[in-house]
Amino acid sequence: MPRMDAAQKAVKVDGLQSELTQLIVAVRTEADKKKKRKMLARIGTLNRQIDKIRANRIISRETKRDLIAYSFIAPNFIGFCVFTLIPIVFAFALAFLKWDGSNPIKWAGITNFTRLAGDTFFKAALKNTIIYCLGTVPLTMIASLALAIVLNQKVKGRGIFRTLAFFPYVASLVAITAVWKMLFHPSKGPINSILLNNFGVSQDKLPQWFTGGLVLLSMILFSVWKYMGYYMVIYLAGLQGISAELYEAASLDGAGTWAKFRYVTWPQLSSTTFFVVVMLTINCFKVYDIAVMLAGGGSGELTLSSTVLVYYIYQKAFIDWDLGYSSAIAMVLFIMVLAVTIIQFWGQSKKEKA
Amino acid sequence: MKSAHTKAVVGKVIVYIILILIAVVMVIPFLWMLSASVKSDREVFQMNPFVWIPEVPRWSNYSNIWTKIPFARFVGNTVFLTIVVTFLQLLTSSFAAYSFAKLNFRHKNGLFLAYIATIAMPWQVYMVPQFIMMRKMGLNDKLTAIICLQAFSAFGVFMMKQFYEGIPDDLCEAARIDGMSEYRIYASIMLPLSKPALSTLTIFTFVATWNDYLGPLIYLKSQDKKTIQLGLKMFISQYSSDYGLIMAGSVLSLIPVLIVFLILQKYFVEGVAATGLKG
Image (tube, rainbow over all chains, first blue to last red):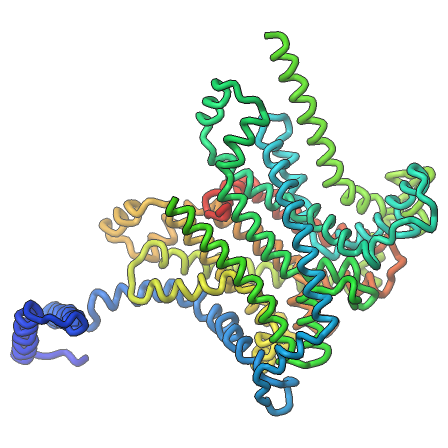
């Protein structure tokens, strides 16, 4: 806006001022709520404009404030927009298209989704993912809670134990799955050789940990081991939020260790437990690396007994270049996660009301 | 009195037994990894008798891994990626979070909703379209692709915002009255106060980037772009019976993450508690 001389300014301000006065009178008698809101908004704008001209500023105080705020957000938001928001929108569209990444895109309607119903590999992937989830979630929750309770006691070397429990979480999957595959090696591994020599399991009955029916069990045991340290930290944070007075009161009432857990710790941790279960479930739905590293062959291919959803998304997209179909599988994953998230929101709002 | 005392002692003993059991389960795989990394392939699985440290430790496993595969190259790529991603993530998300937590501006709720709406969206759902887009931008097989992918997460902004909201507004107000600019307030008041949150976010980002497998697998195709995880996996597939070497490579790949974790861990529980990650 060009700078104005004093006379121009006075004329402009007068014009705006008279509009403002008229509006203020009108808004008092206006019955229609929508119109009233519009008028009020206009009054606000007028006020700001008058302020701006009077103070002889190029941009108003509000605009300046907004610009500063946006300058804080911009570096992250631009990256987030380009690399997350746009691909998400694209993912929804892709599920209804047929495309191999280079030839022209074709409309597919819901055929990608109807194909899913008859796809045995997809059904196996979905089933395995859910079984893995059903096994991992309760076991990890119980193990991490127990660990947190033990490590919340005043014991010597507590810090060291906490650190140790967290090691598996920070360690890379490639490295530790390599160890697990050696420890549980069907013919040579120490676990099976202990079973053979010390527990009298015969050679041909030794468990094949990474093929057939046992593979999901191995995956579940592995992820409990790897992730319990992480959820332990969350539980520790929750435990530290419980006031000591509650325990003192329980002691005065003669409550034992179990009663204290049952009537103080467990109810006080309910929101933490809820959060842990939701996070665990969502993370289980996303399982990929654990399956590929533990059960995958040399080039990481999975069979019907070990395949999981994300593996199939990857396979369909980057091996078969059936992008639309791959996105349809991704939508199934999305709906599963969405369902859990909705349950979380619902649970939280119920809690706040109570 | 005496029986109560005995009871307490028994309780303590049980707690310690549980602790030691847990520690064994947690640590044995790591100790086994260390032990196997200095053994020959034949010694690795030798059970009768089992020895932790062989009579002649094969330290050469640790030098051979660097020549069998371009391990130094993989380490270099991973170090570069992890440092850049962690730095960008900390900087941009604490910056954005300050604005969301302590400033008022137009469209604040709308913008924050965009972050919230995607926080539960698994990356795996949109990884395919993201790849197609990055390929169009010429980022396929470039380390930059991994940086773009990891550095701008909604999670970081959300976490930092939760933490900043716990810092009293009066502090910022007082600074504003003193005539400090918002940038100064962020840099000289908020940042020094957010050590626990920054440490927690550093651990998460560092661990996630260092250990990421699927992202690099999709984007980084040529040998000299590979990260340590891809390289190690490739080595395992190619030399699947060189157990000692595999373990030596694994040990090396763990060292940096463990160091970062050990340095920052004292803030970790506090950080998790203060950032609302516990729900």
